[in-house]
Image (cartoon, rainbow, N blue to C red; front, side, top):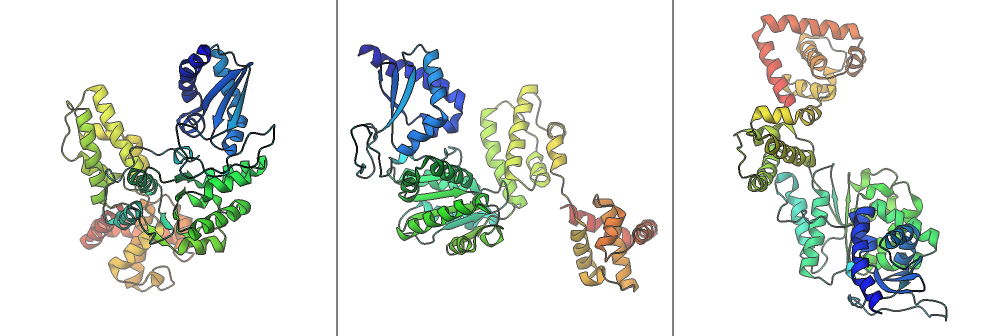
Length: 463
């Protein structure tokens, strides 16, 4: 007995550390951490798990890996088994019901496992409300997320957050989960991506474990699904998601969804799901503006300055980065982290020159891509003409000259060929574009008004 206790307390502890490195932090948190070694009997290492769904998953995906590490640690095990039983150290959040057991069958936990054992994705401890920088582009989304995280009566269900990559959707979802668990440690909060939802649904179908699957996903207090556009076009997964959604709404449970676009714009998503998603609060996280990007950089820089207290930091660097990297907050934050690490390693002051040297690839990739259509729109606004006239057949001077200006800017500010530019100007021939470009080049040297117009339009388009 003493040998087994030593095995459980010491050997299994070392094996778990090795498994963390072997399977990765996410898999470890979801599938290895909840395991408890109960006994080693006749060469069989018996582990307890909270649900039969988890037992089947771990058996199929991690049993061989666990056994390999046990053997490497000289454990007297040649086989592993997983039996379903609630962990004594983690009392269930609600009374557990078990299916009738036969003499050779382990009771199956039908009710939900403890909140800590919900098979969701791990939460990032950095993504909290405290370090979410609020500005005009995200203030409504932040306010809505705060309101949901406070708990109490469900006022809008679901909360649907959408926007491009790196605008803060995932940060807000993690922050909601952290806040809910802080306020109510017993709350059953399940956060995962739509891809994980689909994968677990398919696995449950294959293993004939749909009862367990439904129990897990329909007995939570808060369901959070990230990147829901992933299930578009996947009919069976959408069907199960729809029924899960309805079951939770009927129980007045909170649902929080994120996507890269609005519900109505997700192609391949069933109309009934679109309708359900639109019945709550749909909030757009807009692309960041300069002030918000600068605020994010200033917040991050304070932490790095504390980490690298000896580094000197020149004025204007944060402003430069906020101006140049405008599309993705993750790229912006990653650039700042790289800059501080590089300056620390080489022992140099963080200046604009060092910034451009260290971040040359990021700055080049983040250069603003101007389109022909955007040029046409800005030029039409500047000269107070209609866009339809810009690309239409009219050849009067008041329209032809702005058209030539737009062609000139399209030639110098985009990578489009002359034939492509001509097609975007009402299907004109490339020789017409060449003539327009040459004419503006001639006028630029002699007409100060044209030169000023070109410079103003260029700055506007590059801003």
